[in-house]
Length: 185
Image 1 (spheres, rainbow, N blue to C red):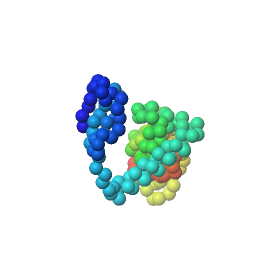
Image 2 (tube, helix red, strand yellow; image 1 turned 180 degrees about the horizontal axis):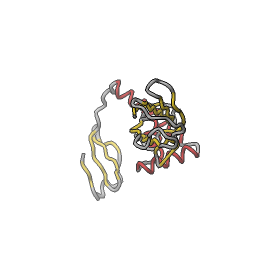
Image 3 (cartoon, rainbow, N blue to C red; image 1 turned 90 degrees about the horizontal axis):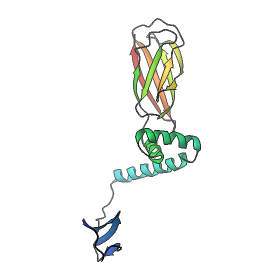
Image 4 (tube, rainbow, N blue to C red; image 1 turned 180 degrees about the vertical axis):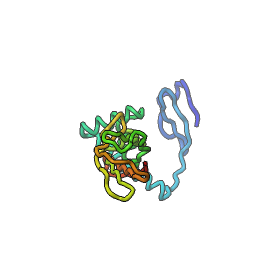
């Protein structure tokens, strides 16, 4: 591929020359390139194109409503991308819980669990379930948004036994679920 700068003869020329050369404009430069070779797409490539087409359609429909448009604009600002690209990324990525911080949970009312989602602002809802080692439900409830992640405040006083299971379930805008389990005590 060659670049032609400032040549008055082809300054405004674009298109095909002969059978295998093309001129195109890129900014102030004129680019000379050969005709590309058309190859058949593999099944994986075709499936990937279909996924991206679905993601683009999702982005167009999500950005119509002002509430989701605002959410995707914020997501994009945090990632340094446009709202449309944030919506596409949201469609393509599965929800994922990165970590559950349990250091502040000792089994007392008001103890806090911090839930970090892998992709900022990806999750719409987070449910927390705490189960005793013998399988009985200690408590269950919704976490609340906190500093771009989530937190849950315990509502039940319970002596913390080894093997107590904390299950966190996250749900994204597309109603896809993810789950992470940690044991404390």
